[in-house]
Length: 256
Ligand SMILES: Nc1ncnc2c1ncn2[C@@H]1O[C@H](COP(=O)(O)OP(=O)(O)OP(=O)(O)O)[C@@H](O)[C@H]1O
Image 1 (tube, rainbow, N blue to C red):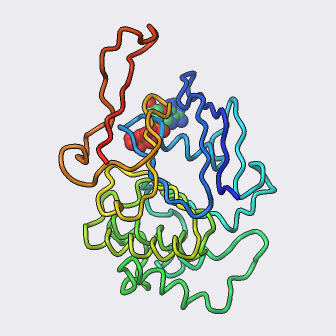
Image 2: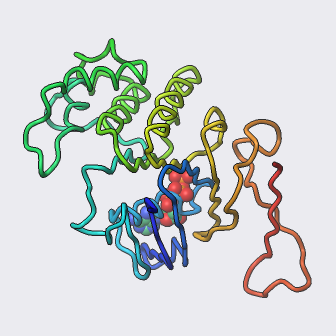
């Protein structure tokens, strides 16, 4: 079965096409990195796949069900791009993670909730912060708590939007280890990354977006060196006499 099956997905925001005709099939168990420059539409695409923003065209199936109520949402974990601390009620880090075990069909969290939540916090290196209020934590610490909240569900499909921005390298590495364990347990992972970095050993496939279109779908780019640099686009414009007149022709250069 495929974890994600999307065809012809188009999203328009503020009157502008942001995602154009994207087809994306992600087999169960795959770890897919979604790459592309700022503004290429990565966040918008994953938000459309999860039904957070409406599509103007296209079909999406998640975990075998058409997008909507039929999707087993309790098996889907999503960590949006860094947002501020969850506002309102002052909650501790542990409480935030336990809340990841709640969903519509389960009104009370399971009995082993504290142990599971603490294990998830530990996996992200923030177990010692379990009783601290999230509002008092640094941005990177808050991000780790939100990742732990998604991991604690042991999701079948985990979608992460630039999860490691602002997180130091050792913590990124322990996060990659935690993700490897999930992957080994069969979780499908879609992760938006700015650079492959420590994720390189984990990533099976890279999809690169440019102006809302898929311009590369295949092996991930190398982690280091010129072509792994943060600002590198992984695509190079080349002049092609046969190029259509409505835009630059892109020839992919992906070093295996
Ligand atoms: N709600 C919105 N209304 C109008 N335009 C939007 C909205 N959300 C995003 N956009 C525009 O859509 C484009 C793609 O944004 P998106 O966040 O999907 O890109 P991204 O590839 O995830 O970028 P980044 O790497 O900076 O996170 C940008 O030009 C952005 O300004």
